[in-house]
Length: 110
Image 1 (cartoon, one colour):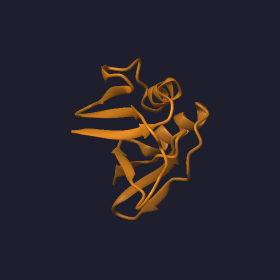
Image 2 (image 1 turned 90 degrees about the vertical axis):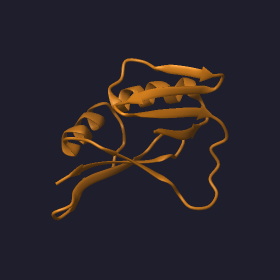
Image 3 (image 1 turned 135 degrees about the horizontal axis):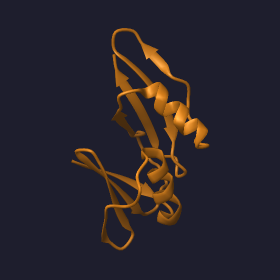
Image 4 (image 1 turned 60 degrees about the vertical axis):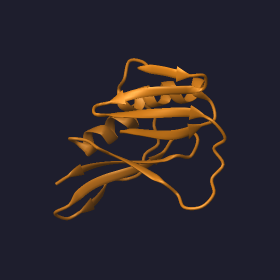
């Protein structure tokens, strides 16, 4: 599976996403203005294109082993994140926005 997100500036977005996911570098540059990062079984495709929004907001969610630990690491790295929300017997999660306003969410299944 490949999930594509629009970004206004790949030079800013690629380091931000590498830091977010603890990656050492882009995996693929299949075309001008496109970088793909391998995240386990999926690819995250960052495409340099207009980031204006219209219609419904899309949220891209990523499952992780320990959402609280990830949140603390991101805070230490200077990433602005929301609080951990707890849904009893279901999930813990937090949300954040990338520099272009893409809505991301990280969760741990309980």
